[in-house]
Amino acid sequence: MSLGYQSPRRRRAGDMTWGIIASMLFASFGFGGTFSYERSEKLCFPDDFIFGVATAAYQIEGAWNTSGKGESIWDRYTHERPDRIFDHHNGDVAADSYHLFRQDVRMLEYLGVQHYRFSISWPRTLPSGLSNEINEDGIRYYMELLDELNSHGISPIVTMYHWDLPQALQDLGGWTNPIIAEYFVDYARVLFDHFGDKVNVWLTFNEPLSFCHDGYGGLDAPGAHSSGFEDYLCAHNVLRAHGMVYRLYMDQYKDKIKSVGITLDFSWLEPATTSDADQKAAETARQFYFGWFAHPIFSKTGDYPPIMRERVDTISKRQHFTRSRLPSFTPEEVEMIRGSSDFLGLNHYTTYLIAKNKGKISLTPSFEADMGGIVSQKKEWPKSNSTWLKVVPWGFRKSLNWVRLAYDNPTVFITENGMSLERGLKDSRRINYLDGYLKALLTAMTKDNCRVVGYTYWSLMDNFEWTRGFSERFGLYEVDYDSPNKVRTARSSAEYFKQLAQTRCIPTWNYTV
Ligand code: GOI
Image (cartoon, rainbow, N blue to C red):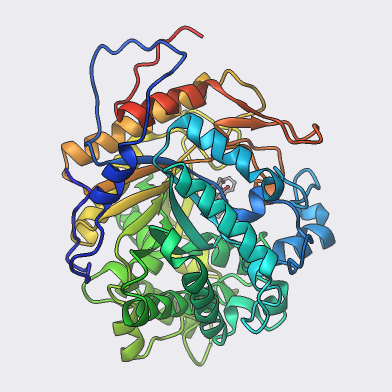
């Protein structure tokens, strides 16, 4: 299994492959864990497989109004509606990585990871969202971070948009206004021009499902509550924006930019029973939750999944709408979006059960009604500290195989996987989660032949967990939010991950602490 895989849709010849990137980086790592691990059976990833950790701007940076940064929808939302945040906190200071990023890089260096996935804040670089005014301090900040990473041999993987839309653009309707695709292209151009030669991998969007469905149809910022309508408009413009940025890179930045992809989240959706109705409902749900974004980009035919088109069209009619609530792409847009990714960035955390919803379809539009399934989880599945996140490693293997079969075995890069717990340094349950999910991943690669080139743990450190505030902790490092300098301390899982990143073998973890 090699990182040099070129997916059939990967259109550039002779570019720098994952394998070269990884081997260049890998040469510089030493070895020196303080923990002792028994290595009875060796379960190892290929030599050119890369391990890293992830964060996102709003969740760690703080400095929400420092040195010319513009307001984001999460600044506005947490300030105006603290009641919507579990512990009434906000990301004003968070882990203060705006000031402490050199410490972040020291932590990465200690872990010995090959890459660091972080996101750039759109309003920190373009305060009003538009490219007429560039915030020099924002550019300086990311330049220094990138230089610090590169000088330590850590490959930067950069997300352009991890949910922190400039408020000024939300005032125009945000992702529901088609004009935003053009503004996103302008933003991407600024990023390519300033940082293009310092970044190995670009991701346009993090989890459009989350920020469209939960932001425009649910309780995340901007809190639009318009499920079955605005979430579809959001997704439509996000897909157009993604395709346009990919074409920009192909047409004008081929020599400077190495690769561009997108990150989609895919929870495994298992039929609640073996009945035909539930199996069909589960497959439909996969097309709604994942195919919604993956089908237009990664399928041979492009466009929305046929079952989604059919269901939303039919249900819209029954609800007396003149036109479908799911917008349509022009044939040119279908072509522009189809194949617009060098690889598939995948976030995977957990598994849900899907049962067919046998109730009558309500007159009130909603994504859930259109999807037609009822979502649940098994009581017996081990818990995390997040209500939605249960520990189900076999769902990871099933997700990877579903992707392999649906989209002709694309090159997959795991951009997030992780587990939340409460405060505490001895996080053996997190190590157990990692052990299970990494084994499922390795099985998918070796037994099922899924093409996976890298793994990224969410997260490097505890951070602002959106509407859950600081109450859910995903970090390999604990952050002491009460301390003025946001002291970070390595958990047991950090030692485990260090061993993993440096050996590429799953540590057997009956270790002595
Ligand atoms: C990433 O999103 C993200 O990229 C990071 O920024 C983030 O820090 C990281 O994850 C960690 O969270 C119980 C239908 C309560 C509607 C059960 C079905 C609520 C709502 C089960 C199913 C689930 C990870 C909210 C992806 C949003 C949390 C997407 C995970 C809400 C539920 C549901 C439930 C449901 N998701 N997010 N939810």
